[in-house]
Length: 343
Image 1 (cartoon, rainbow, N blue to C red):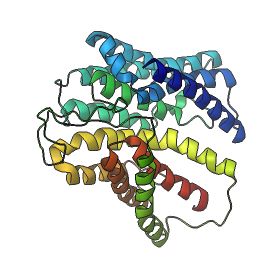
Image 2 (image 1 turned 60 degrees about the horizontal axis):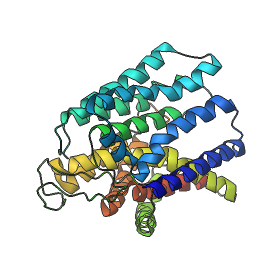
Image 3 (image 1 turned 135 degrees about the vertical axis):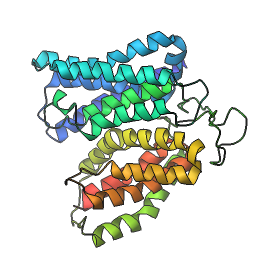
Image 4 (image 1 turned 180 degrees about the horizontal axis):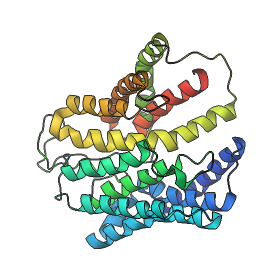
């Protein structure tokens, strides 16, 4: 574990440096110190929980301590807002109370329960609403930083479900098997499952193979239907290597991984014991599509339809490996292809 920690720390520092270079490449006009401090704090649970440290945190703390520590998620906002004299007490209070409520809810789920319970649904709603309706975008009111509230609530989701609820991340090789010993095949409707989330930044070659495969399978639907509905239009251009690499970096870490954690690692995962694999896949894909309802229109039904279809293929990628890394590759490939060659 010491070697794993050393590797994780080294990669964490490298990732901070890479993101900072990306910010300079895209010419973001952002305050250096407060932005770097805030982003560095936000990246801690996001990154280190992908190396198995959520399980260590859970077993190192008592139940009350785990709930109270959830209030620390206000810190990334404070280190950004205080030096710039833009502190908003309503935002600060929300970033204390919502994570606290989520932690308390998830600590109340019975141990060993791997199916979606009412506490899970309430917690997922409390995580999704601030992102969908931009409740905390005003906390980082500078161009280029609009994704930081999403990253913060990704941290809250990770802490709540991995540390407080105790779902296995999968970064330590935990098997996703039910307590009864029967395989997770989508037909077991029992609730006592070790519902492995698959949150791991330790890559495997099969992640790439499966992720790219599902992207290829989705492409005829996404491109064909998108062009047919006049939702997308081809743009003939040759992006630079730097532009493509920057798009992949930002999309993978700030869009794909957070959304795959929520919709596949948590929602699809917890729905399987209730609905079976196929029912859970369809339900999570529909909800994923509906989460795009307010993109560019009051109700953008074209976006909802295409996102729901994409959600099926992202779910297939996650189910194949039970790893968010896999479905995040599919998700990133779709979004980057769209951003570079379609409008």
